[in-house]
Structures are given as C-alpha cells and as structure tokens.
Length: 246
Image (tube, rainbow, N blue to C red):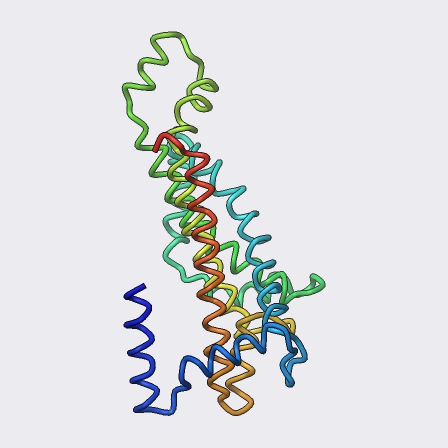
C-alpha cells in the first residue's frame, strides 16, 4: 500500500512539472474506455484487450504443448539433448520481433496473413523461455532418484513419468509464467507493427497517431500491466494447488 501511495505522489509531482495527465484523469478516462467505444476505432478498451489476450492464449498454448515435452525429453535424454539443443540455442537469441518480416513471407499465401504472423511471433516468444525452464528442471533431477529406480528395475517410461515429470513441475510452472509474459509483450509489439484492426498495441499506436492522446495511451499501457499482473497471479495460485509440496 505504501508503495502505491509513493507511486501516485511521484506521478502527481511529474504531472505538475510536465504535461503528463494526472492519475485521477487517467482513471476516469480508463473507466470510460472500458464501457464506451472509442470514437476513432469504435471499440471499447475491453474489446481490444480481449482480442490481444485471445491471441496470446492460443499461441502460447501451442508453444507450451511443444516446449514442455521437448524440454523434459531433452533434459532427460542425451540423444534428444544433442538433437534439439544446438538448434534451440542458435534460434533462442533472436528477438521474436525480428521474425516478423519472415513471417509475412512464410504465411503470405495463407488467409489472415497478419493474424497468423502475430500468432507465430507470440509462439516464438513463449516457446524458448518455457523450454529452457523445463529443460533445466528436468536435467537437474537428482541422479540418486533415477539410480534407485533402476535398482528396483523401473523402466524408462516409469522413470520419466514418476520421477522426471514430477521434479519438472516447478520448471513447467515457471516456464509457463515467463513464457506467457514474454508472449504478452510480443503481441503488443506485433500489433503496433501490423494489425487486423484491433488489439491493445493497435489501440495505443492509433491514439499516438491521431494527435498524441496521452490519456488514452496511458490507459492502454495500464491495461497491459493489469492483464499481465492478473495472469501472473492466476498462475501462481494455480501453482500452489498443483505443487503443494513446494
């Protein structure tokens, strides 16, 4: 609570010295935009938020469905590690937004090229953090657990499902949280570069282009932060249920 008060005081002080809008003005405009369609774009802030969030959830779900099994298998098996890790380590340093021009070329003949390209960018952004987190967690499974299982004649499937996977749950949870956060940032940037006519990134960009409407821009930025905060806390709550022993 004290941190919020200090933040608001700093905000009021900066607004007093500059042309930055005061917090109460941003709050009022933010609440208006939630239910009243914006005059230029004809949609509410909630509609733009829903469009961006839907894209992130769909693309991230695909990314995690690949990253989690690949991360576990690569962390457990040297053969998988030697096969996938060099490729992933080569592609991982490339910023997701650098893929945008190539994505437009790859998906040029597919309907809804821009939308598919945005989903692809989010996929790239969400995949690598999740993979690395799961991989590290699986690879760091205590060797004595595996050796003890082999003493009792456990096969590879049993070791994978009963030892590697439970030990990787923390890495999976962390990977999903980090991957979803990166994917959320990627969709905002992707919508600013090319858009289907809706989304928070597009909303912020248009508000800048139609005369620098700072109150609307800050409202859009605030919504980005609110959604990111809500997603992170939702996943943390889910983690406490799934990984009770932690």
